[in-house]
Image (cartoon, rainbow, N blue to C red; front, side, top):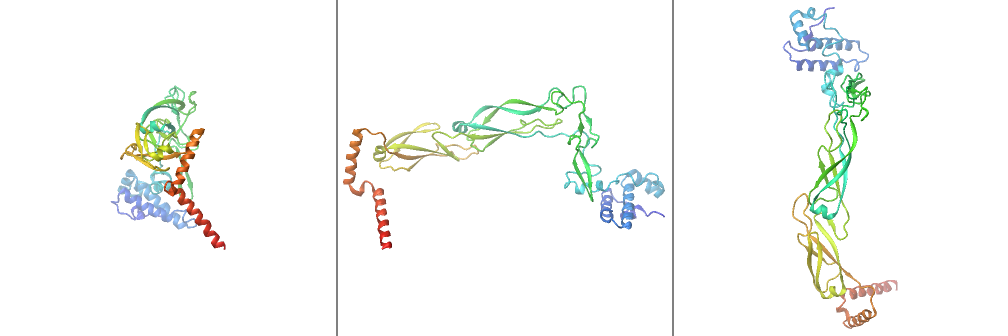
Length: 382
């Protein structure tokens, strides 16, 4: 039976470009593929016909021979088994490649040795509050994987080399046909490297990397806080097969301070004072991270009173204005009194009682509230 014209089979003009040929074949293949029409002999025939037409016309040499001599020019070379369109999954690789991990058209994947970026590492750095606020340079010692010097990172014993993987032919991935789709998976033999080491290096045992400790200098910028991290590029684990190194992330943790607590750019501290200073007022010296400053406490200061010291806090590593220092007053009750001190306090207590509510308005107000509470309760019960 005579064959139909290949251009007619694909439904394109004789001037059709390669892209137009591929588009036409893809449309017909999707329509007539046996996986979509398992019981249709007619669809199978149409699929084979379109496949043969595309095999010839997608090859520049065969297309020239076909244009000049017709079917007679390609009968011996245009068989059903080879050529540019020999695999259904290849022609659709550019369509489904992104979904199935990069299955490229025509057999997918770069031949030769595959390289892998090294893993990122994390180091937890503990700092004092002073170090975090002012910044400093610190030395850290990090365990990491580095390139093996004995084999120059190849993994093969000196004088030998890795062989191309026979399973994936060096691609690092293999195709798995699952019904209508073709999937790519990591090669189980070489684990994606594309190489097989038959005579491994005795230092790294074929890994191409060994574990070592390295000492690094980390410049901690002023103003860092717990949760911040510092990135050291290319200081992570060495890559495989010559791949780039990963990064090292230094995570900052600031230790609790004996005096200050930090909230953002502000510092907080508690300042205990005795009852005499609280009642009469006075001047105290309070600490800051830059030295001591004076704090004037007015007379009749109560516990919980907050004083703000402008620009005595922290300047954040992210910029902005410097924070404040907030001092919270705590009035301390005296302890371990001697006889004379107790006697003086008793006399002082008597004078307070003689003054009535004026000396302790909050205490008397609270007592009045308690009395009213119980009076109301009696009335409700009665």
